[in-house]
Amino acid sequence: MPGEPIFGNQPQRPQTIVIQQASPVRVWLTRILVMLLLVSLFMNAGFLASQVSSLAGRPIPETYHSGDQVAKDKIAVITVSGTIMPPFTKKYLKAIKQAEETDAVKGVMLVVDSPGGLVADSHQIYHRLKELSEKKPVYVAMQRMAASGGYYIAMGAGTQGKIYAEPTTWTGSIGVIIPRYDVSKLAEKWDIKVEPLTTGPFKDALSPFRELTEPERAVWKEIMDDAFQRFVTVIDENRQQLDEAGVKKLATGQVYTANQALANGLVDKIGFLEDAIEDLKGQLGLETVRVVSYQLEPTLSELFLGGEASETDIRLQALMDSTVPRAMYFCSWGLGVPGW
Image (tube, rainbow, N blue to C red):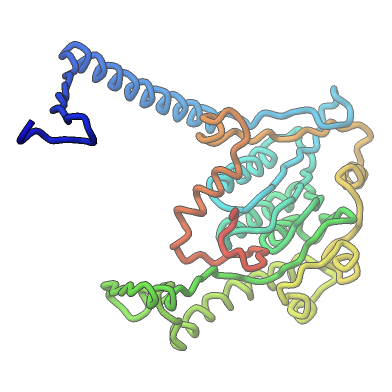
């Protein structure tokens, strides 16, 4: 038929599109369900937050580790594992405080399995341990790794405490690192222009979008040298086998095996946690003692995820803090950001 569109030998007929509108009842029901879901999520988040808050005010629970289960005198085991950084630092500080204030705790066994972490957090833990060691003996048992900040906190045992390293422990890595990336060439390739507004020439000194200038390097070198000298001094003051010159000779950032650490005076003995506990028990002069482990309370994400979520916390925290300049006592083979 003239004027009628033809597809092949068949005429193409107009198609009718029918749009069905959702009924007002269904729309409102969907909105109500979404609102209820959001309210439920907020209530659950509030409940978890209140649980964390209530746990924070309670004593840290103890679990039996070894020894005489009915003995009154105790040795408290405090384990520092993973990267030393918030939110975990406050847990360790709380555990140290509890061990110090509990009369039944006669000595503390610090277990370290950490590549280190932030300078400030490492020093906070060391400082509190050092105060504790002046009142009660503190021994250290190094496990897989006790490097950089992990070694730094071990100095909290003081001159009277002993440091044990397992035969396969890696330790040392004495030094400071400030992670920085230079993506200036990539920005140039993609025609990205960065023009931060600052109040001074050093405000964006660690910007990854341009090369570091010599004056900026001098500023950050002074900052790192200060942290490095503090690290050296802490070891010098707490390792009777080493003087400042000896520490600086070892402070190349190198990781040492247990045998190398023993030969260089970084540790006292090679052995396991049980060996260190027996040694501490002997120093305390206790025939019977109950060894307990402090069970550090979970973080909000650990409660939310229903288990250990330390790596999740670390990765989230590292992602959010990745653009913030942080000096670290951290053992890193070019990884830069802890936990990644």
